[in-house]
Image 1 (cartoon, rainbow, N blue to C red):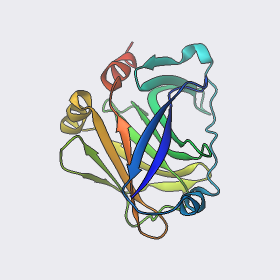
Image 2 (cartoon, rainbow, N blue to C red; image 1 turned 90 degrees about the horizontal axis):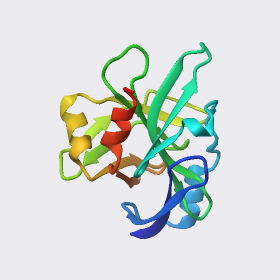
Image 3 (cartoon, one colour; image 1 turned 90 degrees about the vertical axis):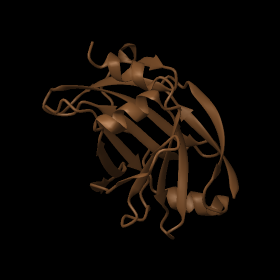
Length: 189
């Protein structure tokens, strides 16, 4: 096992929190750099900074789609401390006309697509998710948060998001659920 420092970037204002975690795959720093090579870190954002609100380890943001529709979501942006490469960009919101919240997991380019993504909330059973597509920002895996999963996230403390690197090794990233409920509720206001 390799201990890796991960930064949780709560908002683009530069506020970060250090999280030291042992990755679930034994690999060296060079492998990490290779895995995340080519990942673009910027996601288009048209929201003003004053529209961002913090909810412990989550933040909310509103952006405008190309169709001029306002979309609000809560998010976490997890980065490697050493080189600021993105490990995971997780957004949760009510996208489109759907009344059920959806979690959008954006993982780095170079992941193994057949393995998909899995999420484990606290000690509950793993949930498997298939990748929908990859673009220049990374590979996207959506998960509609049905009642059981949503309730688990609202009362849970931590989720483990796991995926496979290009060599088929599992990588597991901890995601804090502190502030998730308040953040999600703020989207209705």
